[in-house]
Image 1 (cartoon, rainbow, N blue to C red):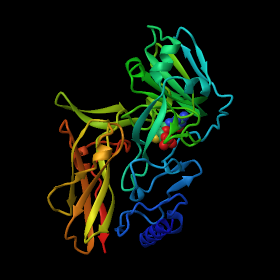
Image 2: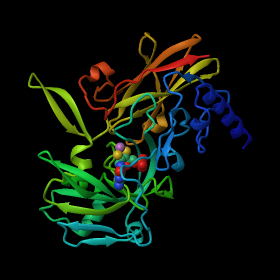
Image 3: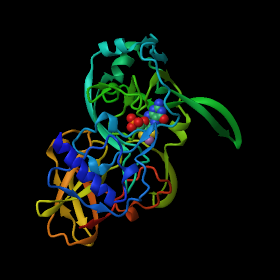
Length: 388
Ligand SMILES: Nc1nc2c(c(=O)[nH]1)N[C@H]1C(S)=C(S)[C@@H](COP(=O)(O)O)O[C@H]1N2
Ligand SMILES: [Mo]
């Protein structure tokens, strides 16, 4: 207890130095630093950064990551229509459309079905530097989407599975320049192969506790390896259909507009946000044991990682050490450390890049090229840090 208070005080001091005092120190914050570690100040984080934007949104302070699993009350959170507030006792998950037996399942029904765990860290596709706070990692428990769909009996004509949340809002749909105002639910769809694979999970627990309202109580979808958008919270119904689903959050808002060379010609293409791009970022730099440590995080689609390298100022890329525990989990986020010897006092630039076993290398912002929209930021993120 006493130890924690001391560490908390140390971190508070460092945060105040970085101009992140009063509003920068949320109630839940616990310092990640081991005894004898001192946080170095980033100079690229603005003084007015808000870790909690309103009652329903929260980003994590990546400098404070202190283990593989983000504590439930710290897990980053965001959504588009606010919290719907589902009555768990009255709750029924509806399965409808092109199925042999439409279902209405209570939480007791769902919890009685075969369950499994999934370690999954994901980021919102809007996550970007320098804060990179829209991501977290958890151990989720639930029932496979496939198990529920098989109980309903999926018909051959079903090509697409739409998952609707209980949250709704008014949307302006523009068709040939004409606006129509209609109420819609948050909805995302999965193609048949993916919906019936053994990957998507209908989760009811996070780190051993029932989901909080933030996390989608009582039930949410999780699509391992994908960005956050398909992880439909407050899941209300699953509808099997023949047609493509073209709702706003499926077909329009989660898009990237970029230039791509196709057959030797530059084309401007729009692509749907899908699996997470290979990415790493430096989360903190600390002074420890006469040297400095650079700690960071890797996110991707589940492809095994080959290496992470760190570069200081204009130096050479140096191999970082991959954390064996987090590297074992296919869909979890992963950690690395780099021991920085002989750091000189003053301001430095620190950057990381990750390479997967297929030889994909995290690009620089320049190499990432003509991406006009900001979602899917996965370029290298140089950080400016002061060595005291
Ligand atoms: N029902 C519903 N589910 C949703 C959303 C939403 O607006 N409504 N937002 C999605 C987006 S864009 C993200 S990044 C994740 C965030 O999940 P979290 O709050 O558990 O971190 O929820 C996804 N699921
Ligand atoms: Mo998101």
